[in-house]
Length: 153
Image (cartoon, rainbow, N blue to C red; front, top):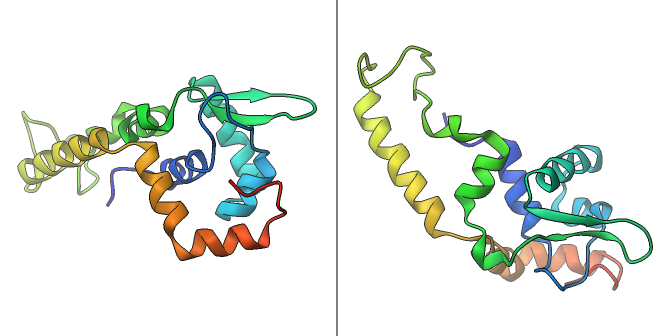
């Protein structure tokens, strides 16, 4: 069992497509095409991320979504918290609802330590790191070649 949801992964991937404040807003439909995330699902996710203050949405001509702060200042744990809440940091590896420091399951000590390592790693990595990785990948370049020129970063 992984501590982060698929939605958190989608959020990281989608946000990595967006430009820093002052850049050009991206259309949600273009982000969906680039990432393969279903458009309706992504629209709801982007709305939620806007309410959490991670992105800004602009309506009308030249509208779209853009990061609310530079990608280098958005750590992955902030995105995970925005999507999954802080509960992802406390879940039991075996899925027991009553697992705690006071009454832990057989994997509690191990999983608590691993969760802390995961959280520290997510805090150290930013959206800029993900964007660099995605933009350098073969798949990303292939997707860019299939999109209209106005969509490419």
